[in-house]
Image 1 (cartoon, rainbow, N blue to C red):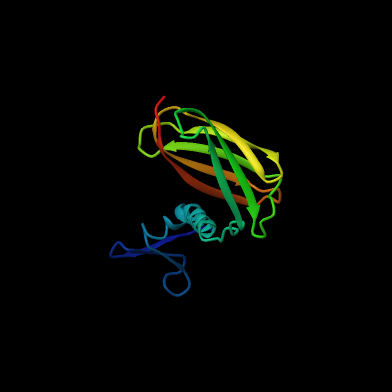
Image 2 (image 1 turned 30 degrees about the vertical axis):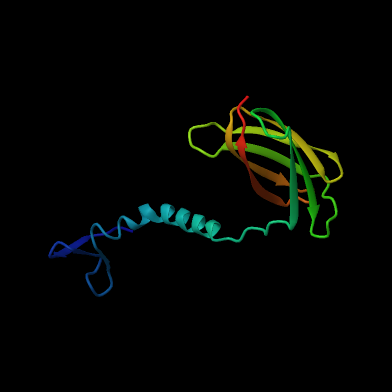
Length: 160
């Protein structure tokens, strides 16, 4: 559509094709930028929708842990986990990753996997490379795909 520039009023509105009676009015600087920000606005709205969505509830399981050796010392440490559902039945077929972090900043985390040794019992060995206080994070996926996370503290790990 060919446009003919009409009269300008105070530098803020330009009339196109036919003046006020049937033409298009344009405000320089304001509405010209709107299409430029449309994709950014759409992305923001989509991300906001994902951030506000509900997550699946955490599965109702209990996890007990045993540590070997006792007392806990720096070095290779065996962690045995007993996983049960709300009816105290063993939870089988889970995939459990362990992450050990020092309770103070500046230390890199240590990772290991726990393997199922009997129904509902999982064992993994993790290297606690120095004495001090550790936090063990469990990141797991049940056989039905439900995810869970738990943590427990290992206080006062003795140096070698």
